[in-house]
Image 1 (cartoon, rainbow, N blue to C red):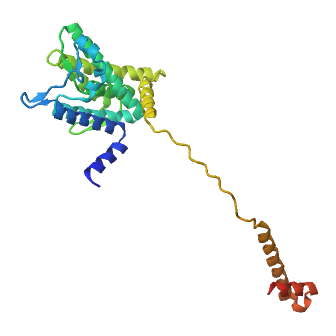
Image 2: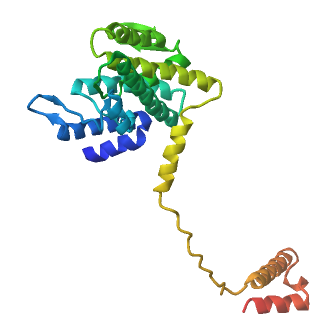
Image 3: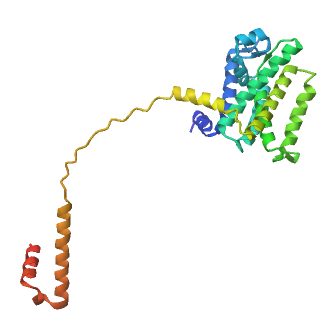
Length: 284
């Protein structure tokens, strides 16, 4: 098996967490080819992919509420996010389905993007946002809200509870909020808030991820080839009925067996004239 076949196998069997990781890596490679500027040594993601906090630009490119969640500003940015995605996604998948995971990722990313746009409207500055952090925070907070006391073994630290890990990550965002990348940290917190809201509504019987699942199923069925009705070929049964012949053969064999039993018990002379004639014909 070559590397390409191995990657295909991992993609097909790894579940939604694995697929999201592949999608993010794929988008990063595309941005590396098309959007990386070697002259300034950084990515220059266009406004039709990155989420802009400028309200006019945002209104013209509303789809960026989804696209920005799959692109990253650098390799370390990507690696850190994928590590947290793998960690939080596996925890989420312990209790929920792949469709719910994808729904929380997409909706959490949208919610975090809206928080980013609103924050910069209030602050009065504009900027661009890329990265899956807000969507991943939604997944992490969903798992934490549902199972806060899940025990985790952290290398060099020991056994801790899930809410301890989540609290530290949220605390880092809160500390950095006034220092640098304010809009990005607000997006993280917005995603976290959505994760909390999602679980609370789910526990009351409302699954917000169903809308995403229905949309995806619609498009999947739209492009899915329709099954053709197989041509029904009628076969005429030309085989002769042999039921009676098998029955007659069975009866004949039984009569022979009975006559042979009679001979073994009483001798050949004990047979009647009819039995002798029948045995003679059967032996021909």
